[in-house]
Image (cartoon, rainbow, N blue to C red; front, side):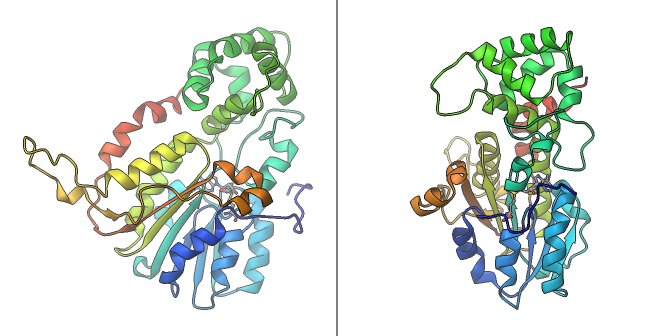
Length: 332
Ligand SMILES: C[S@@+](CC[C@H](N)C(=O)[O-])C[C@H]1O[C@@H](n2cnc3c(N)ncnc32)[C@H](O)[C@@H]1O
């Protein structure tokens, strides 16, 4: 258990009020919180005594919070340390499920724990594992070819200096083991000092975190499994933090809630591919009040949909993002 975790740490669950207003009409059943974190969403849902929560998180450190909630709501709260790509293994009566919720990315505790390597201020060995991983960021930086590093930086970070940064990493790792501080120095040395709003290292750190945690396939499998678990009438709600996540979630909800090919030249509309009702096309974003209290919430976007049909075929979703999921399979 990480020594830096304190139960009294201030925690602002992102878009909590907005999420609750979406799911509360369905209160009186079971809610699946796929990204428990510090339990902000779970706790709020459990305040209504007619609700049950099944929560999961890939990070073992969250047991500290899960155990606390377990004591208070013994028969209404269950926690499992699994990844959300595995929610199909959860034993739950589907008909009782009212909503499945994802609040993607890392938690405040994960970024604050400098040993875990999510922050540019981290010290020591490169890590970035959220939990239940096969390798760490250190393995990637010390073993990946220049070409593959470039591919990860370009496609998961959209970093315009990807090529030069990958080249520099290969040069430096011949001389020493690259730790977190070395990596930020390498990035700064390539990019130079610029008065950008975002830190020089933001995009490379995002790219490495996505790769280490296989975040793209996790999300796609998680969404498809959520669809298979939730009954018709149930809600899937997702909070995203970066553009790749948001593109996937937007496609998942929008593509399967709209009748396409309405052209008279292509009249064969596949009604079976319509399995969601979208109440709003635009995402919900934090209010100015929330942004003031919790500035890191600025990139959060909440999208949700109601399931309307049991027949879902998500091959198009899988194919659309195949280039990104293939990158997760790069070897080193
Ligand atoms: C932004 S935090 C969630 C915060 C939470 N909503 C709250 O109010 O405290 C995201 C959490 O999701 C977890 N997580 C990320 N990817 C996951 C995955 N694929 N499977 C399970 N948990 C995941 C992280 O470990 C982290 O604890």
